[in-house]
Length: 232
Image 1 (cartoon, rainbow, N blue to C red):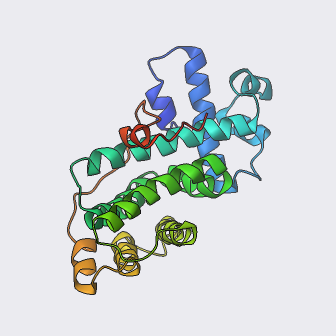
Image 2 (cartoon, rainbow, N blue to C red; image 1 turned 135 degrees about the vertical axis):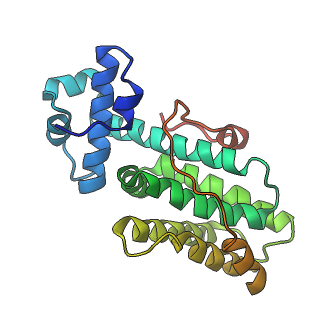
């Protein structure tokens, strides 16, 4: 049976139905992180949760339904904490560097969630749209402030996002250490036209460690302000 995960701990004081649903969601995170969304099966998820297949279908319509609900929780918890961490920061250079570093730290603080999120961004169009909206907002802010000198278009945002995901994958695989966030943040700022000295100073500025906590939010205030719809 799967070891107790964050969804189960969150549902510990709830009824049997909610606890079973939480076990399935924890099992799904583990299986998705290991196998990927396409390779994972309902049978494997149910087995990991120690329930029969019929119980799975009491709680979720199908595997895609489960994927969407797990992804929205992971993305929502990460987005909510990023909102909180950056709520008082207006400078786009600071925001871009901090968002990159915090996102990687948060995702790596729960490796199974980090792997599931990494796979979900590429597998789920709605989640990819949400990530692009977050990136675009801060990059366009930097252009308005005169800090970024390049055109903010689709290819720019895709490259920018790919840099973050590559650093996250490196951390999760153990190929890169905690400095990966600062390295990629410095490269991003240089790509956006920030002077080398400033980019390095901002990207490597000490910050307090941040670990992902599980909470009830699936949409943070930044998402609501941007008008980004929920995934489900």
